[in-house]
Image 1 (cartoon, rainbow, N blue to C red):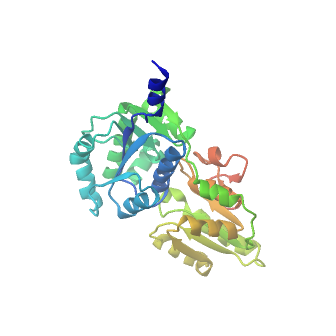
Image 2 (image 1 turned 120 degrees about the vertical axis):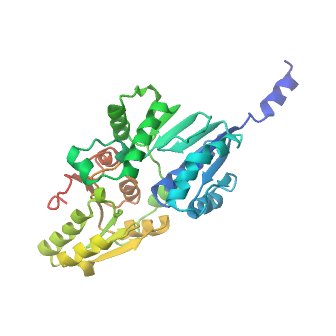
Image 3 (image 1 turned 90 degrees about the vertical axis):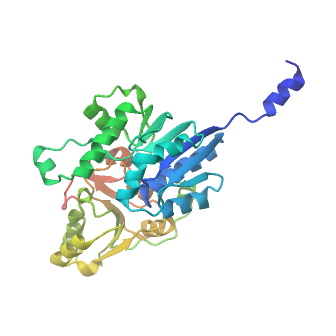
Length: 340
């Protein structure tokens, strides 16, 4: 090969790998944050990828188009209810991905039925790999949840490759399924560069002495009763401080509001709903600390974001949370109101 031919070959761009991403089950929150993070990371390392994102919810479609205009967004079952969307995922999503020209599929928690491509499954949900007692199975028996658990465990066994967001989640899945660890890898969740850069700036925000903050949901494993009882104890033991608790996350919050009324703290609790990253940053910078009472976490985005914003963290010492927090926060036993 002469010098001219070599230079011509060097100048040519390598072929682009066509990657399909199944985001049809994602909504606003941690799942969407993770998806945007993958796209940002791949762009940062200069990967030669042609990415197709299959999504169903308007918030996901809009966010990907806005943040990553070079990504091909493919609406699927847009605006449909959960049952109809799930049925179409089973019946026709695989065929649509097959026809897209993609060479590999990245999907979350479950395999896509009827898809002939190599499937890399990104496991984010620890609940699928928890072994319940007979009593717990009867108490929380929900046919749809049981079906999803079985599907997630089947995905671990049948996928081309498995990616887990924590070592704890990987170990839990392997212990339950008896899977050979060769196909399993851990890629921890990351944070946007903008958040890290903002955290490195001088902190001019004044933290309010009695202001507590938490990101949670109304799911039972989040253990919100402990969160509320902590506020009750603080008001009892340190009445000279103007305590308040601000809770971010999507409800419904009926049970929490009733319990707060029973505990006599309803006027001290504010439910903020879904917050943007900018709004979350503001809450972290003004809070005395961020509290996380959840008993079951596959990772723990909330504590990670709080630490990035230099907000002190008090969290439960269980599941994957110690892996995320390390020695940068205070860890207490699950349900430990007095310890919190």
